[in-house]
Image 1 (tube, rainbow, N blue to C red):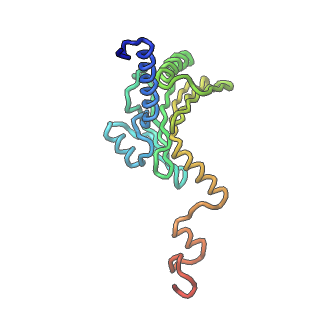
Image 2: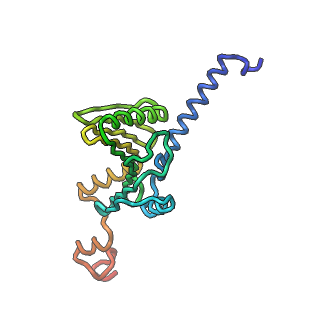
Image 3: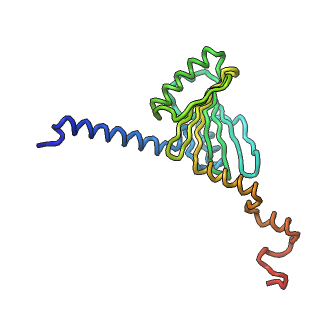
Length: 212
C-alpha cells in the first residue's frame, strides 16, 4: 500500500516538513535587516553606499565598539513604512556586527499603537509567539530567543517610538567575556601598550636582560 494514500501518514509528513522549514528559516535568518551578522564596519558601509542610503551617525564608543545609524532600511517588510521616520542602527564589537536595529518614531500614540500591532503580527507570523514579555510605565518589550539570535521588540508610548533589535549571540558572548576580562585585569594588551606599561621601549617582549 502506498503510504502517501494513508491520511494519517500524509498529515504527519506535512507537519514534519512545515516544522523543519520553520526551524531552518529561523536558523539561517542571520541578516534580518540586510546586514549579515559578523561582517566588518567597512563591509556594512559598502552595503549602505551600494543601496544609496545616507549615514546619519558613525561613532566609536570605545576601542572595540562602533555604532552606525543609517537613514531608512534596505529590506522590504510587509509593513506600511512609506514616508515614516525610519532608521537602521548597527553595532559592532571588535569589528564584527553584533546587532542590527530598526528604529521608528511615530507622530502620536494612536499611530504608535497601530504600528505596534502591525509589527507584532509580522514578528509572530515569522518567529512564533515571543519567549517572554515585560512592561513598565510607558515601556513594553517582547523577546524571542532563537538559535544564535535574540530578538527584542521595544515600544515607548511616551516618545511614540518603536525599536526592533536583533542581537547575534556568538559576538555578544565575546563582548561579555571581553568586558569580564577587563574587569579582572586579564584583558590582552597590544604590544605597544605592553611595552609602555613595562617601561621598555627598545626591545621585543620576549628578550631577556642579556639581550636574548
